[in-house]
Image (cartoon, rainbow, N blue to C red; front, side, top):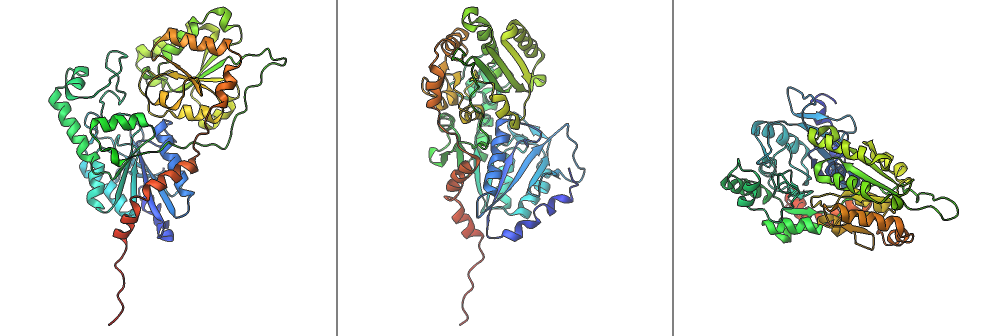
Length: 453
């Protein structure tokens, strides 16, 4: 990382393309440090916009401890390109999604915005920056256009944005101050009411909302956001390399019996259900060469009780399951060569898991929980299989079908749709921006020169 003095120089080239529409993408993390779905989706959009004529995009990612920060400024240059900036901020209230350091927002964040002078700012999250960043932006640049993409329900739900009841795996169907206080007895319904009003006050400053799934869109509308401000746009992924189907043994005796999980390792991801189901499939059905391969990160960041339970389930599965740890996105095509089915067993609603798009890219049918964005993206019996969320025995039945029905894999594979590329997703965002940007450009344009006399 460079010194704070390098940050202004990172945007000096903006004058070279003054007529291009300038978009700032904001994320709560940079994929160089955190490989979550939000970080990848926001960065893909940043790269996709820069490939389109008439657009230039910049990427501002929040950084926090344990990373070091500069004394003079929270802004830091990332040595990856002139248009990528980090903003180190740590004074954050997770309950209200609020930044307690208003002075730093005004001094550093607003200074960066006024120097860059974007036409449009697209938030992919507020974690660390806080809801006040929307107000600071609107105050500094009144004519700016603001877009927000929602990736989960954090604005609605204090329980990590998962809409799952605390202390259990029960799904939450409706948020209200009373319901939320039931999950957090140390907080009153009045505090949750104030939280809701606080967050909605800032969200109302946005001109447009984007949701990658209709399920998430409907949830936010039910919560009180206006449907007319929403646009349904799927995230784009890198589609340049596609893994071929796994070669089967000659003579047609091989089976499509390699299952895999990709993603974060946490209690909300339902891995305990998948591992338990794998262990329960009858031996004569599972066979000697079937495998369940787990690729995921962040296990070390989970509570010790979860880590212990996860290790016990992997051990109990014996030779049937293997935990391979974290992987890089660039490794996925190689890994996918040895995979037939992708399992997405999450016990929360999900929105639009990138792993489903990745599985579709490589032509792998998905076995997933029958709720939320998963059920929306995977058509049961057409592009994959559904099992009742959290139900081990139902997943055992789906695994059994996959193992004993020889034509099932090919039939499901034939129905898989092609996912959006990074360029295609960027183009769809541009079409949404076009609803806002002509007015923004007109407001920012200098007054016409009148003829003399």
